[in-house]
Amino acid sequence: MPADPPTHVVIEPLAAQRMLAGTMRSGRVEVVDGGDLARVTADPGDDVQVVHANRFEDVVPGDGLVCVVVDGEIRCYAPDPVDLTVLPERADIFDRVRGVFETDVLRDRSVAVLGLGSGGSVILRELARCGVGRFLLVDHDRLEIGNVSRHECGLSDVGRLKTNAARDLVLDRNPAAEIAAMTLKIDGDTIDELAAAIETFDVDLVVCATDNRASRLLVNRLCVLAGLPALYAGVFRRAYGGQVLRYVPGLSPCYQCFVSALPMMATDQEISSETVASAIAYSDRIVAVEPGLAADIAPVALLVAKLALQEVLGDTASTLASLNEDLVAPLYLWLNRREANTEYATLAPLATGVDQMSVLRWYGIGLARAVDCPACGDFAADLDTSAFALRK
Image (cartoon, one colour):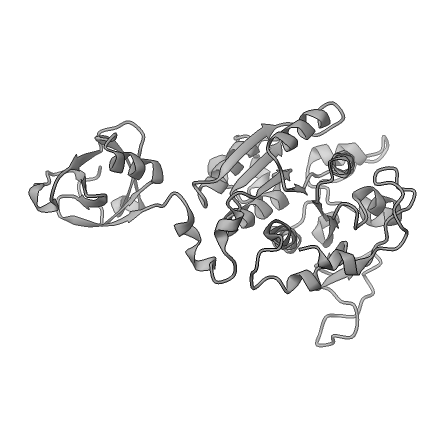
């Protein structure tokens, strides 16, 4: 502790729980902002003393930080009374979104986020902020310095497994969340392990944000076989745009249908790492790593989060219910700019018109299911959008 006492104290959830239960008599304090703020943790230490009393007036604080517990209430002294915030374990965090929907309904909903890179981390952050209570996180990479400019985690997380950094990202927003993490590269050798984990964790929705088509095709077959709804997020080279595919079992085209119907769009992908570049390079031509801006990835990630929220809310009454009539397309297209050497280069500038296709707008595409799709099988050729819209 610094010589000057803090002006505000924050008690972390586990520390508060142990204080109120009478099992914590001392703890560790993390001092930030030059000593202005003290965070009390449940880690071993003697930076703070915890005292139980019948009345606050009966305690005479010493020179250090003291937390006093009386009838389920905590107050802090250093030695004078100090402003205090006790971090909650559960839904108090989400009180400000209760006007939109009842957040408790999401407490038991489970989302698997596959791929925790620049897009997956944003999707995960948004779902955690909304109160989704259960996450299965899957990735095999570590956070590198080059990721930081686009990732939700920062320099303090460089070198960590993305699954561990992402777990902390969720718990920092919802400490009561249940999280299962798998350090797993999704390929033909591991897909059965992933399928078992998804079944065990009782996943309600799969969000596939991996950076290669091979893994997405494997995840697609898994979801088709399991009858699981899924969202597939992808951005084009240098993130000049991107697409989101929503798979609803029995109603919409799967990812294999998308690849078969729109191979050029499926092939146009961001080259965000050496691994991705080497996978598509030719023997006589090196493919450059050209990742896009975080600001250009964000619109795609945010639509995925919104679609995911609609899926896990189900038929829960909310002010978001009208979106079920808007978000009926199986495929969505977003363009950040009129990228040279693409079919969108000649679009008219956004300007003030609304009667023509332009950048910085979402477009719903009525993609039909493939009757002969090797993944999802013999469905009708035309997508029944009215049935799709009725799914809440």
